[in-house]
Image (cartoon, rainbow, N blue to C red; front, side, top):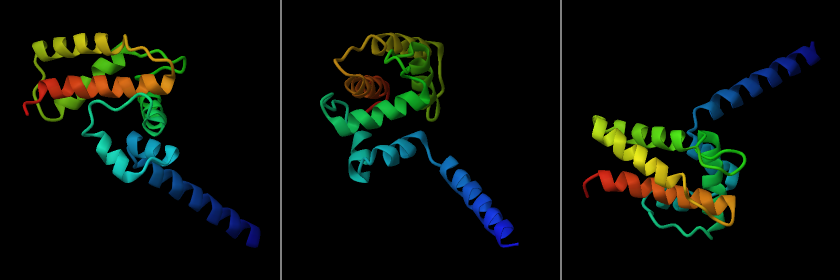
Length: 140
């Protein structure tokens, strides 16, 4: 009976952990995985020109873009996913017209050409490119 109780408790614990973790956003999961501070994490949403040399941001955005499919395991950038990401971010607040979609396709093309000496540097530069694209659309 004791073994069965322990097994039941362990099963419930694992299911609870899976359920709790599934509610986190990709960004939050990566923040936890890479140990990025909450302050630095929140600052990243306002920054458009993060240095590609910043290792903390590099690890974080490498994780985020891999999990979102914008960055492939080989370090290449998935242009289609970048375009979809841009559209989805703007579609939360604005109606997507054909001209907006075309703008984001062009921006995704430019963002997909980013190069860096490291995959983490590339991840930061991709974040900067995406932020710049979104900011160019949203009136200040």
